[in-house]
Structures are given as C-alpha cells and as structure tokens.
Image (tube, rainbow, N blue to C red; front, side):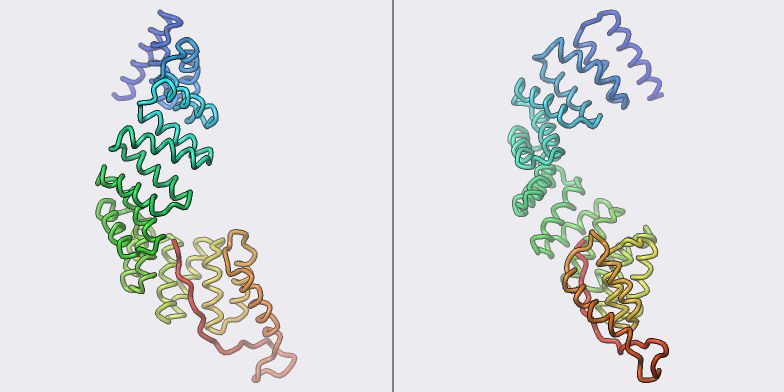
Length: 340
C-alpha cells in the first residue's frame, strides 16, 4: 500500500509539472518526491532546473545539495548548501548539511565551524552535536569532543551511538571508569551493539579487571561466534592470566577467521615463542612485519627476528649435527593489550 501511494503521488506530481511547465515549485515537489524514493538522478534534473528558475529560493538549493550529496558529488553539493546558507543564514539544517559536506571533503576546521553554527541556532540539534563531536575528535580536541557528545546525549538520552562515542573519547583520555559507565549504559539502550561490548572489554582489560573483560568479549561471541577481534581479545586476557596454550588456541582461531589480522600475528608469535615453538613464532613475526598496516614495534621486532633466525640453525643437545633443528626452552613474553 505504501509503495502504491508513493507511485500515485509521483504520477500526480509529474502531471502537475507537465500541466504547468516551468513552475519551479512543482519541479521542487516532484524532485523531492523522487529523492525520497531513491531516484536521485531523476530528482536532480527537476531540482537543478527549479534552482535556475528560482535562484533566491533557499530550500530549493538545500534540496538540490541533498540530492547531489546522495549522487556522490560532494563539491557540487557544498556549493548548493553554501547558497542556501547565504539566502537563509538562520536555518540550522542548512549549516548542518554544510558541515557534513565540509567533513566529507576533509575540511575539518570548516566542518567544526558549520556544526557550531548549527547548534548555536538550534541547541537541541542532537545530530549536529554528534557530528561536531566527531569533527573535534578528528582535530584531536578530545575534551571538546567529549563535551559535544555529552550534549548530544543530554538532548536525546536514547541516542546510544552518541553515548558510545562519549565512552570512546573518555577512554582515549584514560578516563576508563567513566568510559565503562557510558559503555554499560549504551548496552542497556542497545543490547546487541557489539562495538560497545568490545570497547567495554578493552576498558576492563586496561583496568586489570580480567574476569569482566572476558565476560564482555564472551557476550560478543555469543552473538557472533565468528567475530575475529573478540576471539583475539579473549586470547589476550588468557595470555595475561598466564594460560599460554589456551591463549594460543584463541589466536590461531582468530587467524583462521581473519588471516590478515596483523596484531593477532604479533600476539600469536609471542605466544608461540613463549611456548618454545620458535619456527611458528618466526612465521607469525614475519607475517606481521610484511603487513603494511602493522603498527610499532616494527623496528624492535625486526631486530628480535634477526636474533632468532640463527637459532633455528643450531642443533639441540639431543640431536648431533647435522640432524633436525631443535628449539630453545620457552621463556615468558609480555602480552600487549588491545586498544580497540
């Protein structure tokens, strides 16, 4: 029934547009209806013509910008939003849309300014506060970002993604106790939001609350048994508890699910080395070093690998030369926690 009504509405608007050709209001209505139905290429034709025929109509430029953004034309969309803002500077949605266009263009400082205008014009604009928080985070202004996300939550207490981002920024500020509180509230509002379970587990891990970290990661695996990061994180907790063989099994499972998981290759290499499985450890270390996305300690690890490789060539005391290569005694290796 809904699709039928939309089809009838489009047919009526098209008829009105044909009866009165050149009428920009009819063109705008038809263009907006087409945009609502996802027919943006058709919508653009009518909205662009309406904007030419009535260049001082602010909402017409705003509607055109929205369609251009949907068509993946951010530069053209930004021009339309700027025109809408100039024609009606008191409309917060125009500033918000312009902020989004600047953010997409990676002009973060301009995006921050546009979002600040939007929330000044409409202090209860939760989406503008939320996007302002993201832009401030991109600029590295974490305390200001936390304030923006907090305002978004104050405006809309059910905005669980804003609360999640508040927890995320608080964790970056090492305010883990408050971050845990925000993540727990996020999960109260959105019980299946896996990212919140994962970040909650990471905060517990940083605080040394290992049992609670395991519970958070287990909640993910109950909902998605193939979640590679949660599987890896369980391995990290087990490694922290000294359960090396169990940790290694988790790391190997995570790599089965995601073979290009660089951080897991590093952890798996350390666990293998700790278990005395030197050849496997070198395999995982090399996989980590060959991954362009791998982070530090690349240089330190490369030097460590260089010291390990010759040891594979040494015979063990039980096997005289030149028979099979032996392994060294296992030694404990510090595990690195996940940072989400």
